[in-house]
Image (cartoon, rainbow, N blue to C red; front, side, top):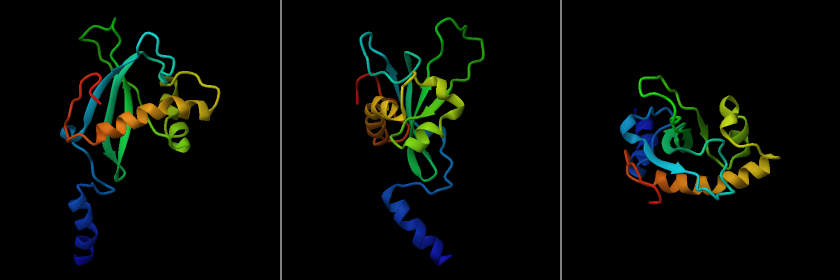
Length: 140
């Protein structure tokens, strides 16, 4: 019991979550993002979506989820695809295999890293917001 307390106390004091923490909806931080008409460095294959920050595996994880297609009726079911937005080449490639089509085509991993890097920075700023924050366009 004492060993568990010794391990958990620094995490609690730092406001960090443990490795097996399951985040609640109130902990997720969100910011809608949209591609500007002339934006050449947009890394995603869709023009709008949501940048999200959530705890996963004991660390903050930045993700991008596609927006609801404009032609889709409100009553129609929609399950947005999501990808991990990171500068870790392994997570960027292998961690996103299921939804890699959500990224625009790139010639190499290096090019994709260069394209997502600004969104990683934006996502890290989003992670610094209070739990449950919904940040508007251009607020980060």
